[in-house]
Image (tube, rainbow, N blue to C red; front, side, top):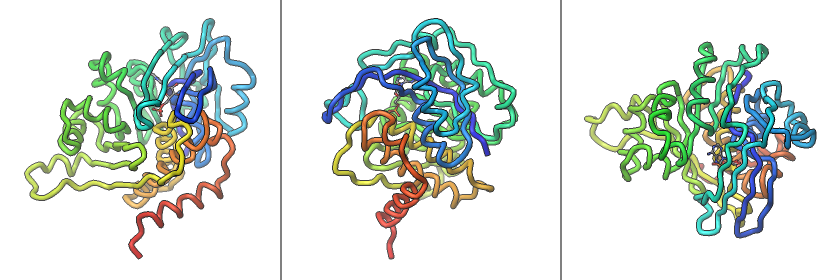
Length: 311
Ligand code: AMP
């Protein structure tokens, strides 16, 4: 089943303890698409400027990603500058230039209309909601956001959340959105905002899924029911940028590749999310995600199983 994704296609300048790079192709929709492309067909909606050339286009083409929904506008492509010098789990943003995204009016190509899966990758929640509303026929909608939108665009974000089946965010974003520090209380609060499932990403410690139907049973005695998937212990994290989007791409790509979304398929998807996140951080930018094979992905999935299997 095809996934349509809307989100940032960007140029990033990033510094990590392992080194730095300047203005490389990146963005939430780019990481997501590359990761998901190993599992299913992906179609992108975004806008880029006149500084986006054939070399960048070729990265998408090499993965069979449909770029007919990437509009070209006069001006510069979205630019993000960040560093991970204090913590590899948390980016420090130095600069965000929305550029051509500031006036973007998403248009959905006719060929995207039969997509059954929709991913609202990180971008202005107003744009995410517009795309959600323009695709009422989709079967499953998942999305992401970040502190930038939680802090300063809360009203628009809360509107967007009402249209989501699954929200994927990290620990800090969950606490910020919920206004509370305890992870279970925060998850319960977020699950009243719209999403039926919340996937909280813990960086190098994996990810946990919480489900609205279990969270609603607040009177139930005992701990909340949840599902936790591991992350792979790695010798070196070269560049954490895009780990979250790659997790989302592996997770949603795997779900979209399944005939039925059973609880077992959901659990496998959480593991495949971790697998794609672990690849993303091994090299700078999107480099590692560009050169994978399905064999490597499945071999790593087995490592994830070994990490948690009891027998
Ligand atoms: P993450 O998976 O959270 O590490 O996402 C990293 C990507 O998010 C980078 O490639 C950035 O270009 C992109 N990004 C950073 N800030 C924003 C923003 N405010 N809106 C949309 N995308 C962003």
